[in-house]
Length: 223
Image: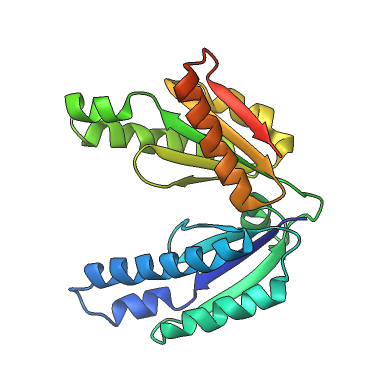
């Protein structure tokens, strides 16, 4: 099984409104710090955190995790933000199962995490020739398009630059690859029972595609 931990800022609106109108910089600073703290904590358990909406963040952890201890540790960690009421809940299942299921309970049959890391070709060169904004809009368009196509089957996350990741089950890998390679992209895929390792393998697959100049638009690494 795979664990998904959902971290919610349950008084998000009340907290924001308490800051006055000169608040957005405060919101961005605090949200970024919370994400940094969660990511730094979860990686020690071979997990990985998706910032998602920032008021809702998601940590993916392997089946070997003592999940109650991790939840308790996160709750204690986030007590350093007393102005925010943070709720930490754990579920058995992958993020797309947990976050889109009406009963809010994931399936416990998934043992592996599949990460597809989508990389836009020539993104840096395009940023020089076209300016920084248009390539950024192209990335957002990919996220929007694929997020709708994969609803209920995967969760997408934009991680900055041209880095877009799709987190799913190996059961949906063929569909994810088919839809993701429809464009001037490369897709590195990592599959592992350890979430952090799946992200590592996806990055490694992309590196191999770049360095070897392969004709294929995707590469799958599994361990």
